[in-house]
Image (cartoon, rainbow, N blue to C red):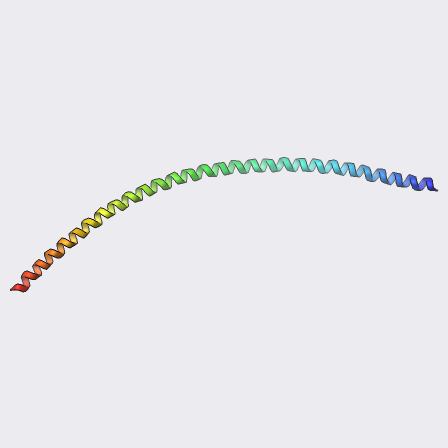
Amino acid sequence: MWEYVLGGATLFGLIVGLFSVYNGRATRKLLIEEEKHTRELIAKMDERIATMNERFAKMDERFAKMNERFFKIDERFEILLKALDAHIKASATEHQEIMRKLTEH
């Protein structure tokens, strides 16, 4: 009777051991595939980030050009404002002179 119990336990141990080995190999294979997939995804992300960096660099160049143009526009407006201010002062002086002459008589 003990022969069959030991035989059954041995058979059970053998089955559990074989499934353990199979499960370990399957897990290792799955982990290797997942690592490969993860590396591919990281490589794609690196490419996209590099592309984004190039686009941001181009945007920076365009913004720099826009800033130069705005600076030139600001300079032109400053010149126009100074001319307009000078014209207003001259007109005010002329109007004061006219009003003075009208009020003298």
